Image 1: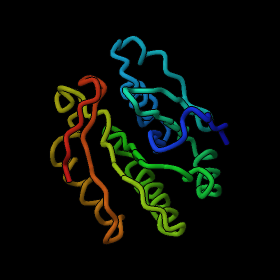
Image 2: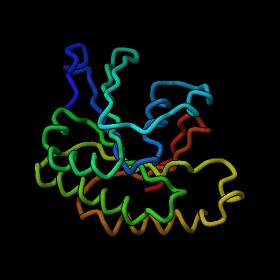
Image 3: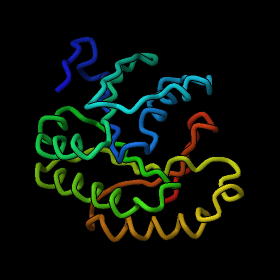
Length: 184
Protein backbone atom coordinates (compact mmCIF):
# COMPACT_ATOMS: atom_id res chain seq x y z
CA UNK A 1 0.00 0.00 0.00
CA UNK A 2 1.27 3.47 -0.82
CA UNK A 3 2.16 6.07 1.78
CA UNK A 4 -0.21 8.99 2.41
CA UNK A 5 0.97 12.55 1.90
CA UNK A 6 -0.44 14.88 4.59
CA UNK A 7 -0.56 17.79 2.11
CA UNK A 8 -3.02 15.82 0.02
CA UNK A 9 -5.66 15.18 2.65
CA UNK A 10 -8.61 17.27 3.79
CA UNK A 11 -11.60 18.92 2.18
CA UNK A 12 -9.66 20.19 -0.84
CA UNK A 13 -8.18 16.77 -1.58
CA UNK A 14 -9.48 14.39 -4.22
CA UNK A 15 -8.38 10.76 -4.31
CA UNK A 16 -8.95 9.11 -7.67
CA UNK A 17 -8.37 5.44 -8.46
CA UNK A 18 -7.63 4.45 -12.07
CA UNK A 19 -8.27 0.74 -12.58
CA UNK A 20 -8.53 -1.70 -15.48
CA UNK A 21 -6.60 -4.41 -17.28
CA UNK A 22 -2.94 -4.12 -18.18
CA UNK A 23 -2.23 -2.10 -21.33
CA UNK A 24 -5.64 -0.40 -21.24
CA UNK A 25 -4.14 3.10 -21.10
CA UNK A 26 -4.45 3.95 -17.40
CA UNK A 27 -1.04 5.62 -17.13
CA UNK A 28 -1.70 7.60 -20.32
CA UNK A 29 -4.89 8.90 -18.75
CA UNK A 30 -2.93 9.88 -15.65
CA UNK A 31 -0.47 11.85 -17.78
CA UNK A 32 -3.38 13.63 -19.48
CA UNK A 33 -4.95 14.47 -16.12
CA UNK A 34 -1.65 16.02 -15.07
CA UNK A 35 -1.81 18.20 -18.18
CA UNK A 36 1.08 16.61 -20.07
CA UNK A 37 0.63 17.42 -23.75
CA UNK A 38 3.88 16.20 -25.27
CA UNK A 39 3.00 13.01 -27.16
CA UNK A 40 6.60 11.79 -26.83
CA UNK A 41 5.95 11.38 -23.09
CA UNK A 42 3.46 8.66 -23.92
CA UNK A 43 5.94 6.52 -25.87
CA UNK A 44 8.17 5.79 -22.87
CA UNK A 45 5.42 4.45 -20.61
CA UNK A 46 6.25 1.14 -18.94
CA UNK A 47 3.78 -1.28 -17.32
CA UNK A 48 2.77 -0.18 -13.84
CA UNK A 49 3.83 -2.61 -11.12
CA UNK A 50 1.48 -2.47 -8.16
CA UNK A 51 -0.07 0.91 -7.46
CA UNK A 52 1.69 4.16 -8.32
CA UNK A 53 0.45 7.22 -6.47
CA UNK A 54 0.92 10.63 -8.05
CA UNK A 55 0.02 13.77 -6.14
CA UNK A 56 -0.33 17.21 -7.70
CA UNK A 57 -2.21 20.45 -7.20
CA UNK A 58 -4.45 22.33 -9.61
CA UNK A 59 -5.73 25.68 -8.33
CA UNK A 60 -6.77 25.04 -4.74
CA UNK A 61 -7.45 21.31 -5.18
CA UNK A 62 -4.98 18.59 -4.24
CA UNK A 63 -5.20 15.41 -6.26
CA UNK A 64 -3.92 12.01 -5.26
CA UNK A 65 -4.26 9.71 -8.24
CA UNK A 66 -3.68 5.99 -7.78
CA UNK A 67 -2.68 4.23 -10.99
CA UNK A 68 -3.25 0.50 -10.44
CA UNK A 69 -1.19 -1.91 -12.54
CA UNK A 70 -3.55 -4.19 -14.42
CA UNK A 71 -1.66 -7.49 -14.51
CA UNK A 72 -3.61 -10.45 -13.12
CA UNK A 73 -1.51 -10.92 -9.95
CA UNK A 74 -2.01 -7.27 -9.00
CA UNK A 75 -5.75 -7.32 -9.74
CA UNK A 76 -6.24 -10.21 -7.31
CA UNK A 77 -4.37 -8.33 -4.57
CA UNK A 78 -6.42 -5.15 -5.12
CA UNK A 79 -9.65 -7.07 -4.73
CA UNK A 80 -8.40 -8.87 -1.61
CA UNK A 81 -7.49 -5.54 0.00
CA UNK A 82 -10.14 -3.41 -1.67
CA UNK A 83 -11.49 -1.91 1.55
CA UNK A 84 -8.05 -0.47 2.33
CA UNK A 85 -7.57 1.03 -1.13
CA UNK A 86 -11.01 2.62 -1.30
CA UNK A 87 -10.64 4.67 1.90
CA UNK A 88 -10.98 8.37 1.08
CA UNK A 89 -11.68 7.78 -2.61
CA UNK A 90 -13.91 10.30 -4.34
CA UNK A 91 -13.76 8.85 -7.86
CA UNK A 92 -12.94 5.63 -9.67
CA UNK A 93 -12.08 5.64 -13.35
CA UNK A 94 -12.36 2.18 -14.86
CA UNK A 95 -10.54 1.92 -18.19
CA UNK A 96 -11.41 -0.48 -21.01
CA UNK A 97 -9.19 -0.60 -24.10
CA UNK A 98 -11.79 -0.29 -26.85
CA UNK A 99 -9.31 -1.79 -29.33
CA UNK A 100 -8.67 -4.95 -27.27
CA UNK A 101 -11.79 -6.80 -28.38
CA UNK A 102 -10.41 -10.22 -27.39
CA UNK A 103 -10.26 -9.16 -23.73
CA UNK A 104 -13.64 -7.43 -23.37
CA UNK A 105 -15.01 -10.30 -21.26
CA UNK A 106 -12.00 -10.23 -18.94
CA UNK A 107 -12.29 -6.44 -18.59
CA UNK A 108 -16.02 -6.69 -17.89
CA UNK A 109 -15.55 -9.45 -15.30
CA UNK A 110 -12.96 -7.32 -13.46
CA UNK A 111 -15.35 -4.35 -13.63
CA UNK A 112 -18.09 -6.50 -12.15
CA UNK A 113 -15.79 -7.60 -9.28
CA UNK A 114 -14.89 -4.00 -8.44
CA UNK A 115 -18.55 -3.01 -8.34
CA UNK A 116 -19.37 -6.02 -6.13
CA UNK A 117 -16.67 -4.90 -3.71
CA UNK A 118 -17.98 -1.33 -3.70
CA UNK A 119 -21.44 -2.62 -2.82
CA UNK A 120 -20.06 -5.12 -0.27
CA UNK A 121 -18.23 -2.36 1.60
CA UNK A 122 -21.16 0.02 1.07
CA UNK A 123 -18.96 2.58 -0.65
CA UNK A 124 -20.45 5.23 -2.87
CA UNK A 125 -18.02 7.01 -5.21
CA UNK A 126 -18.25 8.85 -8.50
CA UNK A 127 -17.71 6.04 -11.02
CA UNK A 128 -16.71 6.54 -14.65
CA UNK A 129 -15.96 3.98 -17.32
CA UNK A 130 -13.59 5.14 -20.04
CA UNK A 131 -13.70 3.37 -23.39
CA UNK A 132 -10.12 4.34 -24.08
CA UNK A 133 -7.93 4.38 -27.18
CA UNK A 134 -10.87 5.59 -29.21
CA UNK A 135 -8.35 7.35 -31.41
CA UNK A 136 -8.95 9.54 -34.47
CA UNK A 137 -9.33 7.51 -37.64
CA UNK A 138 -9.70 4.35 -35.53
CA UNK A 139 -12.24 2.82 -37.89
CA UNK A 140 -9.80 3.22 -40.80
CA UNK A 141 -6.99 1.20 -39.25
CA UNK A 142 -8.99 -1.19 -37.07
CA UNK A 143 -12.06 -2.38 -38.96
CA UNK A 144 -13.28 -4.39 -35.96
CA UNK A 145 -13.90 -1.27 -33.86
CA UNK A 146 -16.73 1.02 -34.92
CA UNK A 147 -19.87 2.62 -33.52
CA UNK A 148 -21.59 -0.80 -33.42
CA UNK A 149 -18.70 -2.12 -31.30
CA UNK A 150 -19.25 0.78 -28.92
CA UNK A 151 -22.97 0.03 -28.69
CA UNK A 152 -22.22 -3.65 -28.04
CA UNK A 153 -19.71 -2.93 -25.25
CA UNK A 154 -22.12 -0.44 -23.65
CA UNK A 155 -24.85 -3.10 -23.68
CA UNK A 156 -22.46 -5.61 -22.09
CA UNK A 157 -21.47 -3.05 -19.43
CA UNK A 158 -25.12 -2.32 -18.67
CA UNK A 159 -25.76 -6.05 -18.23
CA UNK A 160 -22.90 -6.36 -15.71
CA UNK A 161 -23.80 -3.34 -13.57
CA UNK A 162 -26.58 -3.73 -11.02
CA UNK A 163 -29.63 -1.44 -10.99
CA UNK A 164 -29.30 1.73 -8.92
CA UNK A 165 -25.52 1.89 -9.42
CA UNK A 166 -24.61 5.36 -10.70
CA UNK A 167 -21.94 5.54 -13.38
CA UNK A 168 -21.07 7.27 -16.62
CA UNK A 169 -19.40 5.99 -19.78
CA UNK A 170 -17.03 8.08 -21.92
CA UNK A 171 -15.05 7.62 -25.13
CA UNK A 172 -11.47 8.83 -24.55
CA UNK A 173 -8.19 9.19 -26.40
CA UNK A 174 -4.84 10.78 -25.62
CA UNK A 175 -4.89 12.36 -29.06
CA UNK A 176 -7.54 14.81 -27.97
CA UNK A 177 -5.44 15.54 -24.88
CA UNK A 178 -8.05 14.16 -22.70
CA UNK A 179 -11.29 15.06 -24.26
CA UNK A 180 -14.10 12.91 -23.00
CA UNK A 181 -17.56 12.56 -24.45
CA UNK A 182 -20.32 11.29 -22.21
CA UNK A 183 -22.09 8.32 -23.76
CA UNK A 184 -24.42 7.13 -21.00
